[in-house]
Amino acid sequence: MNNPLRSLSNIFKKKEDDFVGLDIGTSAIKAVQLKRKGGKAVLETYGSVALGPYASADVGALTNLENTTLGQAISDLLRESNVTTKTAAISIPSASSLVTVIKLPHTVSEKQFSSVVPLEARKYIPLPISEVSLDWWPMPRRETTEESALAPHEILVTAVHNEILSRYRELAKAASLRADFLEIEIFSNVRSIFGQELGSVLVIDWGASKTRAVVFKHGNVKSFHIINRGAVDLTNNLMHSMSMDFKKAEEIKHTVGLLGTGANRAVSDILRPGVDYILSEVAGVVFNYGKQYNETVNKVVLTGGGALLKGLQEHVAERLRTEVSLADPFAKTENPIFLSETLRSAGPEFSIATGLALRKLKEGV
Ligand SMILES: Nc1ncnc2c1ncn2[C@@H]1O[C@H](COP(=O)(O)OP(=O)(O)OP(=O)(O)O)[C@@H](O)[C@H]1O
Ligand SMILES: [Mg+2]
Image 1 (cartoon, rainbow, N blue to C red):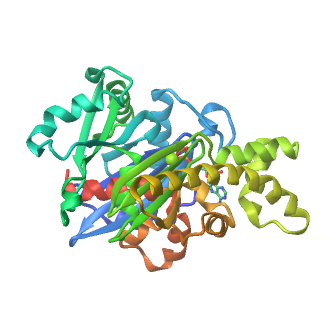
Image 2 (image 1 turned 135 degrees about the horizontal axis):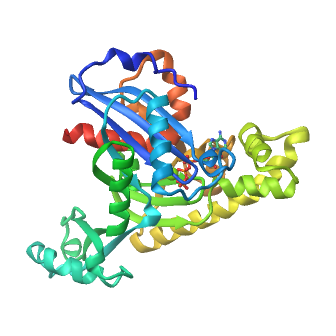
Image 3 (image 1 turned 120 degrees about the vertical axis):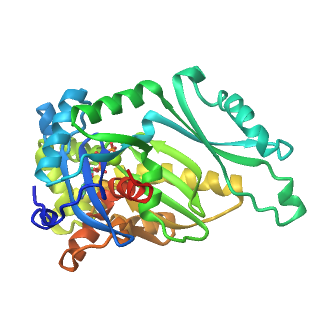
């Protein structure tokens, strides 16, 4: 693995200000180590490891590994990326959690939330409430007019099955990490992607197995949807249509993407319908958001490894008719200048891991 920060990370000696964020995806694990220095977040090192080979499969393949093997993969990644801290924050996949916005009548007072929210949340959670860890946050209200004072309270509710939490805690132990902080991945993303955005922003996390479409307003989650297709489906489409093995299809997907001309035009023509299927689902999320809130999404941010598909940014802009940018999480960290370009292009893959490390950095050990 190419790690241009390997030698730099040795310079730092003190450990208590160092934190590592770990994003455990289905195809790869990503790590970002940050250091707190003079009130700033300094990037010390980062890296990723493909999980396919741990399941005797190719790089880029989807995996469902046991904790012991995952723990091994994490240890390998930390060693190879020269991660020096044991203090970690780990993301929980949104597919293993429930994220929803519930509405309560304006007549319910804030004091009543703690008793009302768990009762109301039951309607959305298909599990006994005793088996899940429930969190909730009231969304800020704007009571500027008489009408808005009568609007229902909006409460963001998240639930994670206790077994999932135990599994992640055991995993941290298997990798000899102190990981007292677990966070659902979309919240890590928002921390590393957003500044002071006004209006409604759609984040598309284009992962290997799944694509998540989240609409944020003023940094708050307003709408969230998981699409059960991801970047690996594009590889599979190429593999089947061009009768090639997975490894070759993955390579061609990376080198050609949607920009193929001449002999490579066929590659892009095969990839496009797969991309458009996902985008049509995303368009549905945008449409429903518009209908529900009478708002328009005025910006799209692409993140996740799938966002790196050549030509995707322009294609999404054309399909969704909106301004589209690629996530740039390392814009929130202090980096060696000579790495600026490398970090900008690697950014979308590392936004969750960066967001996790930023949170630890803010809160301390
Ligand atoms: N340059 C590139 N061009 C096209 N696709 C790419 C590129 N780089 C990475 N990808 C694709 O991105 C996917 C991996 O993205 P990511 O690391 O976000 O997935 P993950 O976190 O493992 O998956 P998930 O979040 O669904 O569990 C792979 O399918 C890979 O082929
Ligand atoms: Mg992911």
